[in-house]
Amino acid sequence: MLLPVKEWIKLFEKPSPGLMEAFTKIYGPDKAEIEKRRQLYLKALKMFGESYSYSSNVIISRAPGRVNLLGRHTDYMGGYVNPMATDTEIFAIVEARDDDWVHLRNIDPKYVPGKFRIRDELPERKIKDLDDWDRWTAERFRDRMRRGEVLTWHDYVKGLTIYFQEYFRKPDGSLDKRIKGMNILLGGDLPPRRGMSSSSALVIAVAVAMKELNDIEMPVGDFIERVGYSEWYVLTRGGSADHAAITLSKRGMISHIGSLPTRAEEVTYAPFPKGFSVVIVNSGIERPQDDETKNYLRVTAAEYRLSVLWIKSAFPEYADKIVWLRDINVRNLGVDLPRIYELIKSLPTKISRRKLEANISDKYSDELDAILSNHREPSGGYKLRQRALFGLAENERAVVFPEFLRRKDIKGILELIRRSHDGDRVAKFDEDGKRVEWDPGAFSTDDRLEKLISILRSEDSSPSEVEAAQLYWQPGGYERSIPQIDYLCDVIYHAMGEDAAAQIMGAGLGGDVEVLVRTEKIGDLKRVLIDKYFEKYGVEPSMTTVRPGQGACLFGIPPKGPSFKSSS
Image 1: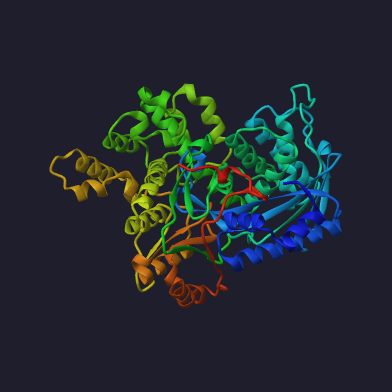
Image 2 (image 1 turned 90 degrees about the vertical axis):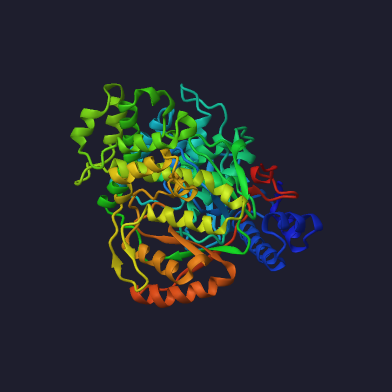
């Protein structure tokens, strides 16, 4: 809905029944929540008018944060995620310009204004594909670092406009469509650096407006992936699962979303557990930004891909059916679960780079070289078996999670979350807070896998034994947690029992913990953590309660966006 700023202000000052209905569709029926949003939008509109012009024709777009309830470290191996949108958001008030300058302001004064010209930022030649975008953004980043430049919040919008402009660029460098410049004001209440994808919400909010103002016709899945990969401009190398969640989620629901590719038309929804909330707990331990940590993240991601090449080399009869680790499953390969365990058992528990190269088929040599080129060899060798078991089990957890939600199996839901975190653990603590033995490789030993195979192939196994042997109950060992976060999760388990389950958020190695907890027990949870965690580690208590919100949209009467389409 395109209106002059002064008309938007009139609309928000004296909201019509149509506007109140739009608010309700996005934020729910809570009148206090609607009033809070109305006042925030009014403040931002007046600031836009003062910064640019009250006569400017603008649209308003919004994008929530996201919390992924199950499906850790799976999007970059083609797996599923089960996210919900948050009830906090970032919004953008945007005016199209007649030139290609982009002017940026933020309602929060700590984010300084900025501007850039799209044509001045474009690559010298057309970006051919994602690999080309990978190389160019890395080169651009290195050039900027050599010049002493620092990344700012403007760069997220810069990367977005560059990557979308490249979509309309011909091989000779000319443009089928020129992305218009914009006057942008951003605001919202989504907290940064809390594991809720605030940067992804920012780019989605701007992208939704940019798509509308430029009449960009693009399938929703392609749009999501292009926005997601635009963030590579700031040297992240994530996928687009967060952006899919932010775009497609529905209020009160958990989305079930596949990746590589993102097929928006195949997204399904299951109800968020009644009587529960999500609490985001800041561990107070930031993930280190040193080179060693970054290399470890790259190594663990590479171990997925190396596992795929190993299995394709050792079992060529399955090679044509496998692209990503997620493809190694009973449905795709047409085999039984014991056979999947046999494939996992074929992987080495630890292996050097030299031995890897000797065992991978020559037909995959180029792919192997590309995988090995982005990290240093880990000193203890590659832990392919426990990493692959985690990835395959986590994807199965993500696959079955919606069914647990639909049948309201709270005990099973909480246990799936705990098993997921067990797969990330590096330590375990008893009820007294004492550290006990924990071996992340224990779930993928020969004996363990042979026992699972035997249970599944024996006619004498009980139904409970067969259920316990299912892949989704196996933790694996991805080791992206840290002892402090494991301690925090164990404190919650021992104190809250069947009222809560906790797991690490995001990429890991520090940061936040996500807790699914009975709403009536949130007070108990906070008291327990203050007493047994925050005081122990000398950390300032920081806990945020979030509930499932509505996906990204253009604000209007009615709101407009993929998340408002009918659901499966």
